[in-house]
Amino acid sequence: MTDRPRVHDPAVPSSLVLGPDLDHAPAGGAHTISHALPGDSGELLLEYGLEIKARSQWGYARRRFMRHRLALASVVVLVGIFGCGVFANYIAPYSYKEIPYVTIAGSSVIDVNQILAKPSTHHLFGTDSAGRDTFSRALYGIRTSARVGILVGVLSTLIGTIIGGLAGFYGGWIDNLLMRMTDLFLTLPLLAVLLTAAKFLDSSTPFKLAILLAALIWTGIARIVRGVFLSLREKEYVEAARAAGAGDLRIMLRHMVPNTLGPIIVAATLTIGAAIGLEATLSFLGFGIRPPTPALGALLDEGQEAGLDKWWLVTFPGLLIVLIILCINFIGDGLRDALDPTQRRVRA
Image 1: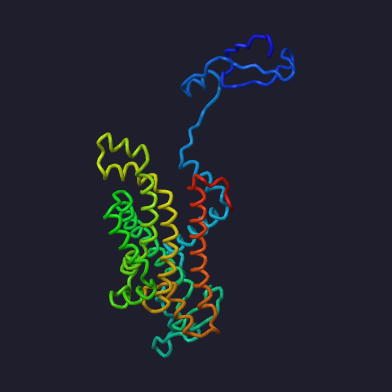
Image 2: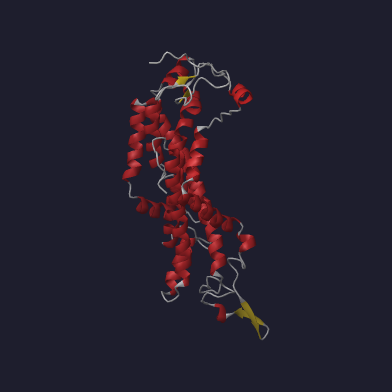
């Protein structure tokens, strides 16, 4: 202990504990500033030149996601790929159904020199067995895949959130009924059911195929939402809202769903990738998107029918499918790390 009095300096906030004063304090000593801090951050800025910036949970998650280099690069690549699909009308050098013709003796016949042509400056991805430009068809196929994937992501997230939220909030027999129905869907062999349903329900258009996929792959999101709701319904703020007279719908929409958005966003992102893979699988097997609508899976089917020596017909559409699904999975991984409050280190 020292007999020296505490220093009262009105120019320095009292929350600071200063180190030893080299001129006056003994070795190892410290002095504490007793002046009170202003209660308002605006007063801090005016009096001391200090500014406190509040950071929301979403702002913190955004900063963490921006540090995930692999996920950030995947966003750039995916936006570029989907952008090419959306603006395929302006980017594609040919129409997806354009067949080259030449005039011989006054009659128009198919230009056989353009059939199964290898990649060149005129046809970047080569041509198919009808002479159509594979690059143009792949661009339109990206548009189809993006449309199906995003629509399935929205529909399956909506279905899963409603079913999982009701089961987790009410519990009891409602929970048992909804979860047993969810377990029933989970026990079904997905690909076999999809092939059968696609055959009898006509999934030849992107919209019909998206509805079919969403009706079968919402189960994962429902189980995630149920688990989070079971935990949130016991929280103090939910009890306080109920005591204040808030109804069940207001409690779920105003207090519980916003706190479940993190897991929902991650699950919805991964669902989009799964939907694009399933759409390509069904189209490849001949049960999905049908001509004349282009689809990446259908391009793979046409390429394998032409023979393995026509490698460009399979390679380029296949690489696009792999690249799209990889980017979506990396984005989902980055979102999971950014939105998880227990995650202390960004993994990429």
